[in-house]
Each structure stands twice: as C-alpha cells, then as structure tokens.
Image (cartoon, rainbow, N blue to C red):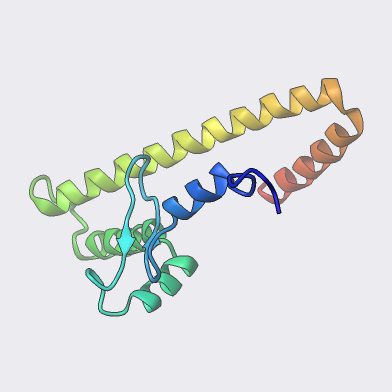
Length: 141
C-alpha cells in the first residue's frame, strides 16, 4: 500500500467522470457552440431518437426534407412566387447551397495545401494520394 493516499488519484479520470452525460442522454452538435440534448424530458422515446440520429443526423434530415420541399414548390409553382413564405424558403435554400459550395471549395483548398506539404516531406505518400485523387477526378467527369 502506498504511503501517499492520493497516489492513485488521476485528474483526467475525475474530469472525464464529471463531463459524462447522465445515462440515456445524447448530445449532437448541430452548429458550433450549440448542442442538442435528447433525454426523457424532451423525447417520448430517447433511445429510439438516439439510434435515428446516429444513422441520419438532424442536419441530414432537415437537408433532405428541404430538398424535397423545394422540388414540390417548383412543381406546384412553375412561376416561382415573388413574395411570401415560399419565396423566403427558396431564398433560404439557395443561401444554404451557396454555403455548401463555399465549404466544399475551402476543403479542396486545404487538400491542395496538404498535398503540397506531403510532396515536400513524404514523396511516396504524396504520389499514392495524387494518383488516387486523379482516379477520383476522372470518375466525376
């Protein structure tokens, strides 16, 4: 037995236990700084909801619903509305698409930077990834 009573004490273990959610709770970040807690206070079936969100995030669910709603609006209104909630929705949908395109562009810029780094530091890995990206690009043409 150790003479020091705190010899087995680990600050990380204490922090981890303190940060753990209560049993049955689920947190999914949707936006930076935001979180969603699923528990018996706000869901009649929290376990089921956790399973669903693990398979299809709320963002994915909302995105697919938005895409379907956009198509329904366009089918029902060949002349798109100039004002009102349908116009507001379509404006929001277009804004979201612009954000997605900008994010994709930024990710590709980071990939280019990472490839340049690999080219200078690990030529073999660079060549493998360059060739894999080349094959992927050909599939998109």
